[in-house]
Amino acid sequence: MSSWSLDDIPWDAFDLGRVDADSLKIAKAAALTESNGRLYGQYLSRVFHDEPTVLEAIGQWAEEEVRHGEALGRWAEMADPTFDYAEVLARFRAGYTIDVAVDISVRGSKTSEMVARCIVEAGTSSFYSALKDRAEEPVFKEICRRVAADEFRHYKLFLDTLNILLEREGTGVIRRLLVALGRIRETEDDELPFAYHCANHADRPYIRAEAYREYSARVFANYQRHHAQRVANMILKAAGLSPQGRIGDLAGNVMWFFMRGKAKSLAV
Ligand SMILES: [Fe+2]
Ligand SMILES: [Fe+2]
Image (tube, rainbow, N blue to C red; front, side, top):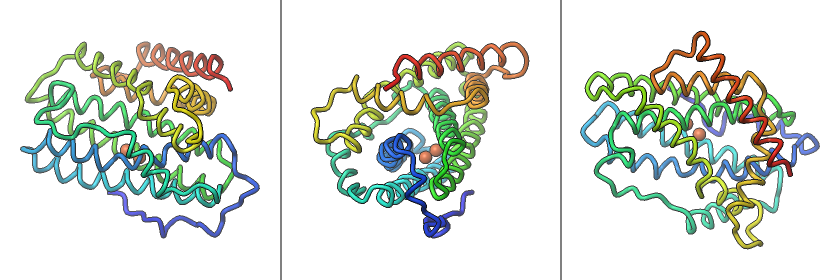
């Protein structure tokens, strides 16, 4: 269980001269999407309403996601005094929400839901690891280090839950792979581009393709080969495939090729 709070961040070490402008834009958007943890927590509480152990873990998980948003939001306010986290968050929430009034997972089953959650955490853990490895501003580096560690732990939590559920539901590899690939594709949906837009360009009309391009170009530029391999391994495990050997090597190469391709084709 994670035990850090905003008071554990060494805010006094903040160094404005070492803030990277691209990372700041991404961090502002991430501060908004992390705050959706509470909504996703409500959604997952409906899906797992009859699983007391999972429910308890989801409550803790949602609080940690919200705290990630608060830490990033506070840092972004220090890096850019014109950025008002509460105000921008209100704008984001007014324009983007998710349907929490469900009785079953939108993915069809509890195991499919857990596969999707693993994919999200695989993505966020690599995202913050890449930001941390690139960061020079010490406070941002420390926030990304702590957040990335939480995201890896969240992945482990959901993978363990998935493996318990699989003993009951027995979802096959093909179905799990399809859910995983479907969830990866959803990163092009509105949530991330709209957050980027609200955080950085609220004065302009919202054009999803444009916001997605600006956001993704900055994100993909951060990744290194080892980030690609790690996220590929995590996705394979969630789909029920071993990341050892040739499948793991192939998946790592494909992921790295995909990331480099995105970084080049979307370059701003
Ligand atoms: Fe998070
Ligand atoms: Fe997470």
